[in-house]
Image (cartoon, rainbow, N blue to C red; front, side, top):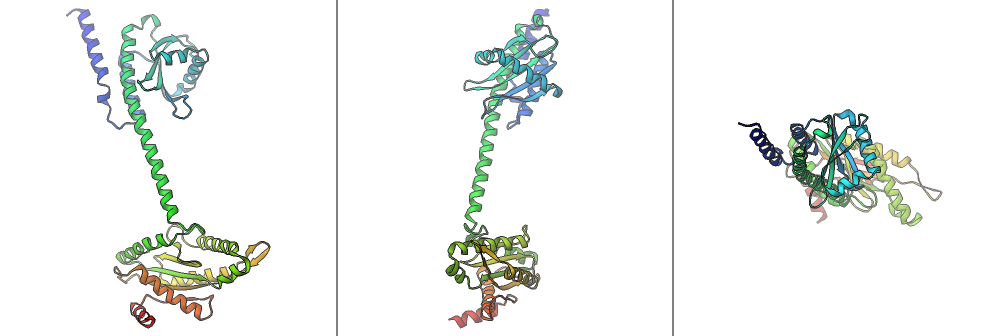
Length: 366
């Protein structure tokens, strides 16, 4: 077989190989993964000393250096592109959307470089810069045509990848925004603790989890004593300030990764204490009660003081209350809170969850 025929067959094989570039990419792939396949194909076509990928940034529309082979040539590759931009050659190449063999300006050996614009019908994606040890006179039109074909294939895959990455970022941003909206919808707008909707949804989950894993669970219903006097004496803005600072003080003293606080009513709050017996919950409430009683809330140069009453109940670790409703648990705590307020306020009253007592009290109410 003649050398000319062998060369022709080799050229056909290379063209077919270039045309199968997309088939060698497992989509979705990262830009780096596609770059590695591209580099392998470039090396099969031409000897390279340095190969750099610049990608257009969506926001600044500048050409950002993404990858360099070898990695230690980043600085000079940036310099090369900066010089080409300054002298106007870079924009000429990009506008032509055709590869070009041009003199190197930053590389010291004075060799030529090949610039491959990466573009589709829609837009310019970037550019590949190749520095080769081959003298300019030995770089054939065949080399350039094959590199052009490869650049077009690479551009199509790169465009799909960039689009996929952009959609993924938007999806994550949307998910984050939706998560923040969901969180805001579960927070009390004044105090920042959870609201009644979150309480109704999550307390039942806490009960089921405690029952399933035989863990204790306690709730503490607290009420700011004579809070109406604060509003009547100092105004509602002062009352709002007291509620916000009260909540922040409570949150600073409980376990942030386990305990949680919800606003149950105007000045009523429910403190949920997973894996805590009602006796230990009572000790915590007593500590909170004493600190709140000692705390002075400052309002327009005046000192405002409040006290808090607590009603505490819970289920122990050996109990199985899978059918227990959150409403019944809160009602039991409310009965102990009622006892605390009736016995003088600024007190903590505790007791275990007693369904018989709950039923008795409901009957008396009727």
